[in-house]
Length: 508
Ligand code: HEC
Ligand code: HEC
Image (cartoon, rainbow, N blue to C red):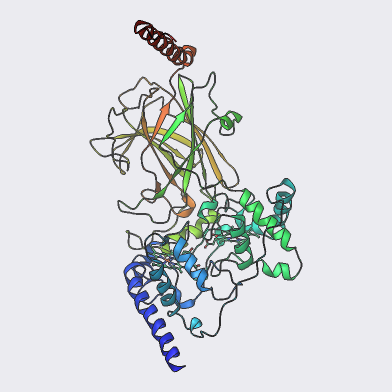
């Protein structure tokens, strides 16, 4: 009896000792040596790394306010928390290491000390049938409005509800209401089941509440709460695949210059992720714009490039000034002390090289340099919203082009900007503006600033270089001739075989 007990203690001790070694190597840089969420890197990020001493966890199967199960902790370690700095470790650490980590994390808080207490998962049940149907989604939408999701997450779920500029986590740090149209960034997973679980448990430590008590009060039924989860699931596409080349179809006649022209429905769209600019000072670790959707069409004379991205506010918007101030004062900044927030506009830049390169070399992606400039279209929401074309030679030098720059039309609608840039393929001032050509791989990159999130200057979101390819004119003949050519080859081949066979006297 005693020996079994001693053995159990030995195993436990071994767990946490090995867990500690793994923790110090891989986790302490963010979560801190004492687990207080204050590692060296912590002050550069929002949300902050979890403070394990408080034992407050977001991704649980247990009720709001309760401790997570070991399986919950394991899941967070395995998969990470998408949409945050917390990476997944399944492919990097062995199962044994990850189990030891779970044991070690629990030593940071006395709440786990009573090992006779086992946190109990909620009995979730499974989804009712008819999940994707219109009726189910209508019911989900009804309760999305009536139980208050819209107040934080907004009419279209883009995280732009009226309460969103005021949201803070339990530590008083600013936090965004999740953008429900980007489900692949949900901390706890994007499936309707994951979403339903989050609605039952809440994300403890954040303003995202649990809705289990509404079930207890019979304000709505379990089926209706599932409908809310299914409605939320319907707001997001699957995680978009990132492709390298934007294919721009050649269309006949006028280009769609208005952002909501129905012609855009027929043009393929491409997703490009953006990340914080952390290369040159002043760096930015907290970008609000996670990516842009891009579509391009041309008609042989001009091209139209549509960029769609989600942004919780139409900046400048004074309702968000306090949020900007909270963001600046909670992050470690290269400037040292936090600058005062200002009503900065939203901005977007599309970047090309000044000339189409023949090989793979391209200007420096971060707005070129003194010797190799880039050609850019810079759009700003400052009224009147407009774009300028010009050349950048590094982050600190921009020379607007004379005339004939890019035109831009924009729409802000329920947490989303839609901007269409247009320009003639060829311009008279070919020395200062890119001359577009069909059938070439034209490097292109994107930059975005959310003014309400204190983004201005080098505090911005950036992409790497991608390519734009404008379809060449396609004469009808091109479609027929490969088929003709194939047929000819076949016929000629057959004739030659026949002849050879005849010559050798083996005629069938
Ligand atoms: C690059 C920084 C970084 C590193 C390295 C890191 N984490 Fe995290 N971790 C975070 C952040 C940020 C959060 C909080 C995200 C949030 O609040 O949405 C977090 C949250 C967590 C959570 C809380 C999950 C929940 O449900 O609330 C656990 C558990 C965790 N990390 C474990 C680990 C372990 C174990 C390691 C090492 C193997 C590790 N982390 C390494 C940044 C990091
Ligand atoms: C008081 C504001 C508030 C209300 C009301 C609210 N949420 Fe949230 N919600 C948040 C915040 C803030 C987050 C982000 C928390 C984080 O990531 O740290 C969030 C996150 C989420 C997430 C992402 C979960 C994940 O795994 O990352 C979903 C889905 C969600 N909410 C759905 C809903 C639905 C559906 C409702 C209504 C039933 C609702 N929320 C009500 C503030 C709110």
